[in-house]
Image 1 (cartoon, rainbow, N blue to C red):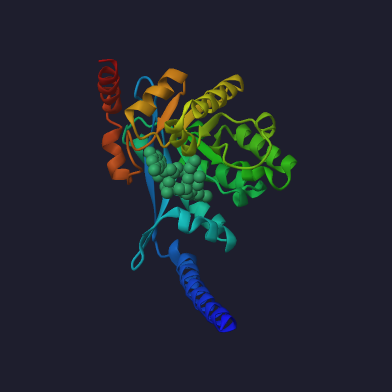
Image 2 (tube, helix red, strand yellow):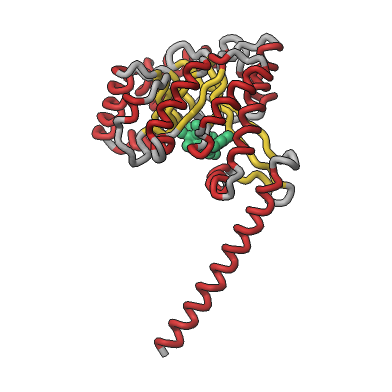
Length: 291
Ligand code: C2E
Ligand code: MG
Ligand code: MG
Ligand code: MG
């Protein structure tokens, strides 16, 4: 009896596996074609100066719009694109589009100082430096208007290699940022070895704030460390006025989160770049908190 149940369970398990495998196979097949079929697009999320409310940059976030699946969120397919070895093509498309979009905004006279582009650890090779150089020349974008968001995953392979590539990017004049800080497993020593400009505090720390003073202390520690390393501090995933007030008080430089704006298509970013758009919002929020 038990044996029989066991066998049934095994059968169910197999059927589930086949279902999952089929779904994955379909996703794989479709993902391989996505870029060439023009199914990829970029959304932009503004990064806002925590005190003045000025937009200091925008992060480019890739979107996959499939005719049948609809919008497939990145967490469902970025890892797969890495496994399939197509993250390089996708990353190249993202970089080109982000740089050309910002160059167009500049031509229109819209004041967006820089765009941030996410870079997979798998893209992080010598040829990536050449690609960045090429794309900057193609688009005419000044190097300081491009920021590359790296993760500590780049330190997993050859550390010397990663250190050198960051230095070469620096030599091109682009800015570098460490994304999802504090969520990986590597030693912190990489922070002293890489010539970075910015550190992004992961959203998980913002969520943690709600559950007590020890989490607040942890965030204060991260901010103090980043400041002593002269890194600009960007906070990801700020959703509430209370969270904004906390990070203003603690001296974080830049806020990125739904409180100001979700990631939006380029045409919806334009109005957010009008003078004093978030300035007024910050003033209102600060007055409300003070009263
Ligand atoms: P990330 O680089 O850490 O990007 C921030 C993520 O947090 C984005 O999710 C953004 O929409 C979300 N977010 C921002 N503010 C808030 C908030 O206030 N509340 C909440 N709940 N979420 C917020 P998204 O766009 O789904 O991207 C997820 C991840 O996918 C990114 O995390 C990044 O690791 C990866 N990704 C996105 N675009 C690219 C790309 O072009 N290349 C590569 N390699 N990875 C990418
Ligand atoms: Mg990012
Ligand atoms: Mg992040
Ligand atoms: Mg991330």
